[in-house]
Length: 410
Length: 213
Image 1 (spheres, rainbow over the protein chains, first blue to last red):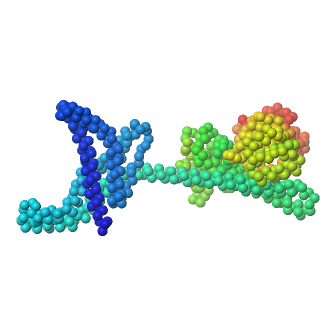
Image 2 (image 1 turned 90 degrees about the vertical axis):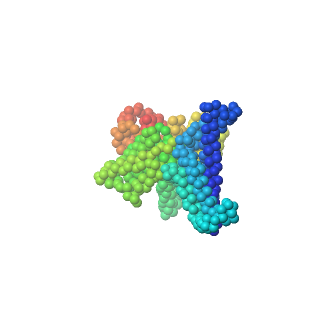
Image 3 (image 1 turned 60 degrees about the vertical axis):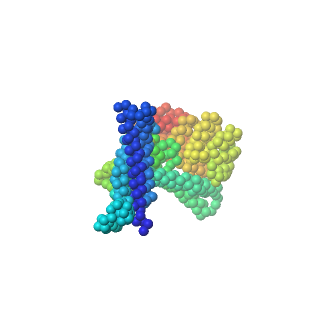
C-alpha cells in the first residue's frame, strides 16, 4: 500500500523541486532583464538598485554551474529516496586548473543535459505535480461545491462534479504513476551519464581492474620466485654442498656407499640446476634491477640452441610490460626448442617511441599455429592483457617469426 | 688464508664456514648484509671476501655493489661473488672495477668442493674465476663477427680462458696436450687481433673486452 504512494510523493516532490528551479532560474533571468533594462533606459528606481541587479546577474551566472550540478544532485537524490531509482552522476572532468575547470564543464554535454532537465522540471515537472495534486484533491472540490462555497447549488452541476471527482480520484494513482514514469525517463536520459559516457566509465573501470589483475599476477610471480630463492634453493644448495663434502671426504668408504653418495650428490646438483631454470623463468630479480636488456641474456644463454640477442631499449618500460616481454622471449624460446626443430634462433627487442617490439625468429620447420590450447595462444593472451598484440608468421617449412608489440606504459 | 663471508641465510653461512674451514681457510667473520660486510672488511682486512649477491634490504644486487666498493677501497682484498643466478650485467660491473682478484660464480658450484676451493684460491691469489654460465651469456651478446671465424674447439678454449683457467687448466679440462692448447690460444689471439700475454687475468680482460664491445 505504501508503495502506491511513492509516485504521488515523487510527483509532489518534483513539483517542489521544479518550483525551486523555477524560482532560482526565473529570478536570475529577471535580474538579467532588470539589469539590462536599467542600463539601457536608465535606472527605474534608486541608482544603487542598478548596481545590485548587475552584480546579482553576474554572480548568479558564475554560480550557475554549481547550481545546475547541485540541483541535479538534489534531483537524483529525489529519485533515489522516493522511487529507489539509482541514477549515476555523469563523470566529472577534473582536469585543468581551477579557473579552466568551470569553463570545461560548460563544454561538457552532461552540464547542458542537466540544465535541460531543470527546464523540463520547471515546466513539465510542475504541470505533472499539479495534475497529480488536482486528481487527489478533486473530492475536496466537489465537497466545496456541495457545501455551497462557490455560490452555485445546482444539483446537476454538483452531481457532475461528484462523478468527475470520483473519476479523478480513481485515476489519481495511474496519473501519478504515469507522471513518475515520464519523469524517470527524463531523469535517466538527462541527469545520468549518456550511453557514451557510460561506456567510457565502463572501459575505464575495466582497464583499471585488468591492470590490477596483471599487477597482481606479476606480484605473485615475484613472491613465488622470492620464496623459492629464500627457501628451497638455499636448502638444496646446502644439501648439495654437504653431499659434496661427504663425497670428498669419504674416499676410503666402501664402494657401494661411495656410489650412493655420488649419485645423491649428482642428483642434488641436477635438481638445483633444474630449479634454477624454472625459477628464472618466473621473474628474475635482475629484471627489476637492471631491466630487460640485462635479464634476457640469461635465457638466451641457457637455451640449448645458439641464440643471437639484440636489445635496443634506451628508456625502460613499465615493470608489467617488461615482465610480459621477458615472459614472451622465455616461453617462445622454450617452444622453439620443443617444437620447431630449429638450429638457431634470433631475439630482437627494440623500443621505438611508446612501442616495445619483441621479435623472435627461428630457422625451424614452421607450421606453428595459434591453437586455443597451444602455448602461443597463452602468450597472445598475456600480450593482450597489457594492450599488446602478437603476430605469427610460420609458413610450412619455416622460418617462424613471432612479433609482439606492446605499449610501453610509461 | 683469511676469509670474510657475507651471506644472509644462516644455513648457508654455517655451511660455507664449515666448507672453507675444512678447506684450510680461516673464516674471520660471517655477516648477513652488505653494510656489515664493509665493516668486517675494514676491521679484519681479509685476503678474500665471499659475497652473496642478494642480501637485505632490497634483495637485488647488494652484494655486487658491496664488491665494487671493496674493489675501490681495499684493492688488496680479493672478492668472490656468489649468486643463485649469474647475470652478465653484474659480471661486467664487477670487471669494470677490477680485473684481478675477482670471481663470480653460481652458488651451485660450492657443491663441487674441490673446484670451488680451487677457484677461491685462484681469486685470493689475484686471479679470476668467472662462471661458465656468465661466459655463455657474454657470448650471446657478441655483436661483432670475428668470433664466427673461430672453430668450435677454439671457442671452447676461449670460453675456458674467459672463466679464468690457465693453459694447464684448459689442458686438463679438454684432455689435450699442452702444446695443442698453446696452439689454440695463439690462434685465438691471432684471429681476434689480440697481442698474447702471459698472465691469466690479462687474457681474461682481453677476452671480456672483446666480448663486451
